[in-house]
Length: 259
Image (tube, rainbow, N blue to C red; front, side, top):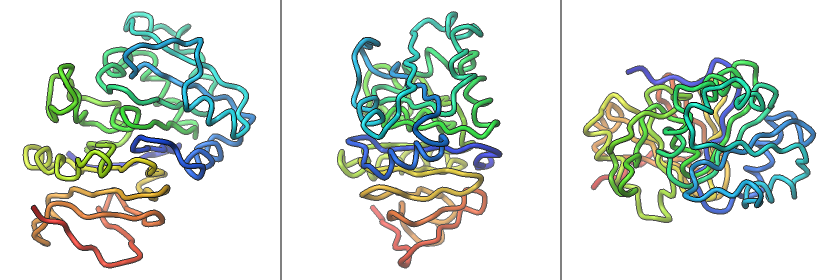
């Protein structure tokens, strides 16, 4: 499976926790500014009350965003209608909140919502998400089991595929998950694994991404790590990575971590 990025548009993929100001600012800038149209999808949460403001809505409003539409359903048939998906068709940015990623897949995978999300990227918009809203953006859905989030390869294995050949984990260091994707890549060596810590994000444009925020991103690449006798290596804020060539541009020498 080839790893590939975006032909158009941008992704902001955050590892959970409180979103630092620079991640919020970058997302708004990629949307075209605070006056643009934003959609927030909270479906990953166990209980969704669309009348209440979540942390992300509050953070975006405090940053100046005013045109926000909340979009939510657990009914796939409804999600597959043009009328329900219409707000995405006129949006400049969509943000997925945290929770469990299988709930997003159950509601929206291969529906009109999914098609409109791809269309949003094609016209140059931005899609972002944190925690579950990060993992859903890859093609392989790690921690997608409905029983619990410790099962890495479970009963839901397909994400939206905005990044092809990629699996994304979150809360990396905060929840001591840095070795978890090793098992996934051993079972699926064709995949590129990206682990993102809390308060940190990758911003994807074209075939490259930049690390922004406060902590680290881990890269799990079978070919690279065979050569360097390790399990993963870290990227820091400001570092960049080319998905097509699987090459990192760092401010320090790569040191692979081994079990």
